[in-house]
Image (cartoon, rainbow, N blue to C red; front, side):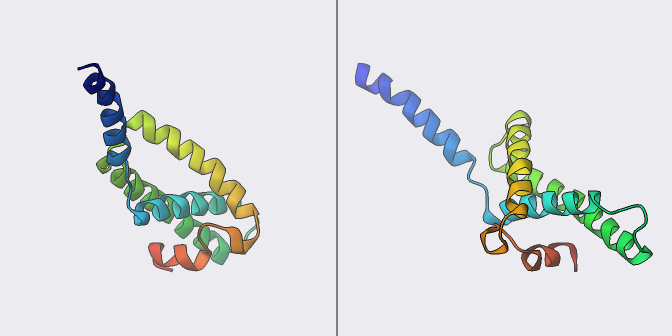
Length: 118
């Protein structure tokens, strides 16, 4: 009986982990959404109208992708607090990841641009 009771936490924790298996597309949406948000926030005030329009597309795309990723993560079993923590961790990761060599980035511009119609 004690052995059976010892297995209960292991089963519960493995079920929670499985419940948070998020599709790769949702992970990509979150990464790209965060990246577009970072890029759109860095547009200088004296940027050309063309650059400002592109920054607006990036900002709007960021919102859309993060909303879509949020919904997918919630469907996969995250609660609001858990996702908020994960999203904060991902924001730091994306910022660092974008600053590294292109070949080491999780996703490239070419991977993300089609997600927002570019």
